[in-house]
Image (cartoon, rainbow over all chains, first blue to last red; front, top):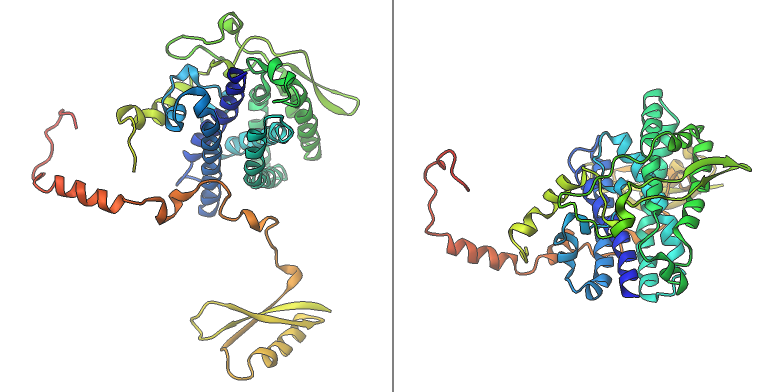
Length: 293
Length: 107
């Protein structure tokens, strides 16, 4: 049991750590200073959430929190690939922030009913801060989608470029059947993907941007190659690059058709963008293990 | 009738401070009433009013400042750093860097 629960914790925590790291790269560079403070705070929240999740994982993994966050090999990280992508411009950053935080809310909301009380209790606390993240993402989404033309076309292009990888946040976890059987996960990732797509489709239609949902079908999720060592923890399942389900509008709502195939971030399979991020993020820890302020 | 919040400056270079509220049908009436409600004894040198409905409050004030560990944002998140700094400074007191590092040497 604890192996499956660890894979759930690492998926949640690594997503928060890695997207938090990407967000923190904006500190000092955001288009204006008040937004710089707000976005940097969100980055710090994501890292604080990762830390709290690693604290639960620590005894199960037999490693302390810093070792979990900074002391693992690249292929041991279980974040979804969308989290590790470079920030590009601020429109891309905000579109990714919107997709990630709305998807994160769907899974956290479900985990409030987890039979694993220690996790459910932590989720309650995390959600108090996540509410602001969603307000922030939603507010900018509405402003940029309303124009001017440059803002609207940039946010639409950013959504279109990343929606496929956003779906992979819901890639089934290793051992998910066991987590479902004992109620640790009240709903499967496939179910949660459906909930999220219906919600996202409604928001995009309200903004007149639903065409970006179609672009989810155009290309398979970007190239995901084994990380530097080439080691894959998932065995044969990991032989194939992750492909996400297709998207369709049916009976007035957006839904996915088909299944995930292959393996992605949840099995330690990352994009080429991960290695440089890992190198920078863990550099101090690797050079001076156990260092403190 | 609306409620208007009233703000004052005690001295002209002081920040605006909230001093109370008056009921009024419009801003002109509010200003007229506020000056006598709050400034009769010379309590301030400037008076502003704003309709309460034009002010906006955060929805979740209990989460201001965050609810997870952000101790690194405060001084009390760094206990012992001063002593550590003095200790390291003491260790390095005889180290003198009096010329640039030669090119090509490792740091």
